[in-house]
Each structure stands twice: as C-alpha cells, then as structure tokens.
Length: 189
Image (cartoon, rainbow, N blue to C red; front, side):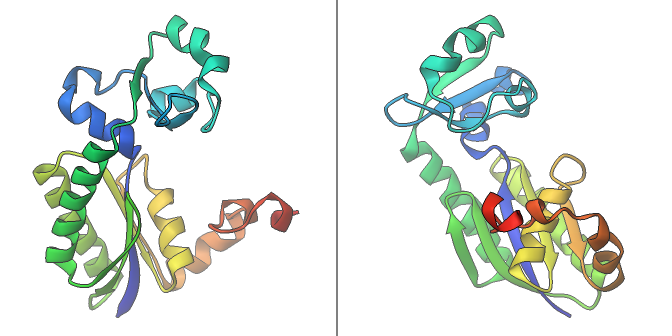
C-alpha cells in the first residue's frame, strides 16, 4: 500500500532549546522572533496559558514573567542544525523526502497494510527521538492533507497516526472543516 507520510517536529524551536536545557522539559517556555518582537514558538504549557502564536512580546511580557515562563531569543543556526539531523535520519530510513519547512517533511511510505504502516512510523519516531532528542509526530494517509491531519491528531498522545480506508471514513464526520490544513477562516465560512 502506498501512503503519503508527514513528519512534524513538535514545538520545534522550544524542543531545540530544551535539548540543551533539560531542566526546562516540563517548564513553560517560549521562543521569540529574531528581533524579540513576537512569540514564534510555545511549549504546551504556554499554549495552555492561552498565549497565542505571533503575539507581540511587549503585550505578554508581564504575563510570561508572572507565570515564570522561560524566554529565549531565536537561534536559527541551532534550529537548522537540529532540523538537518532529523531530516537526515528520516531520509536514511525512508529514502526520498520532500522537506516542507524547517520542522516538517513529506515522504512516501510503502507498507503492506495500515498496521504495518503504523509500526513503521512508530519505529521512525523512536529512532529520531532517541538519536536527536526532539519529539516528533508522524501521520500517514492517501493524500498530503490527510497525512497532515493524521500527524496533528495524535500529537498529544502516541504521536503516530495512519488514516486510510475505514479508519479515515469513520472519523471524517467529526472532523471540523477548520481543522483541515490549508483551509483558512474565510474558506471555512
């Protein structure tokens, strides 16, 4: 069975910073833009505080301080280096990949069935997390859009999701149009 897969590094900039600061593993953490103007990455703990992505730093500076949030300036050289490590492993495991962004890559997955695909993605996840140290989510489906949705669906759980055939058909009625990659607010309305 041929599927499209997507690897997505979770909270990537924050995860990179935490590699060198393991004491911050469960600590609320943000990374700011290159000029420290806006929040460009948030740990789950900061997301839970309700601080949105792209918020100007000056507007949330006091709230971040009050919640003892660790704040980092962007270190794009570090993020690029970690990204190369992740993508090199993915490429060595899968073959040809199509890097979509610094922390995401599409690829083809050829497995005999849905369960074999799930096991293969779990194996890749474990290899990357063990060798690089950043958490990743992997999803697979018949299209890039389904693969993207699958990678997001299990991000806070197992981190691996395959949606094909009955598994995809079963959940489609509960999928909000706004959750589909590439559909903005105007299109959703």
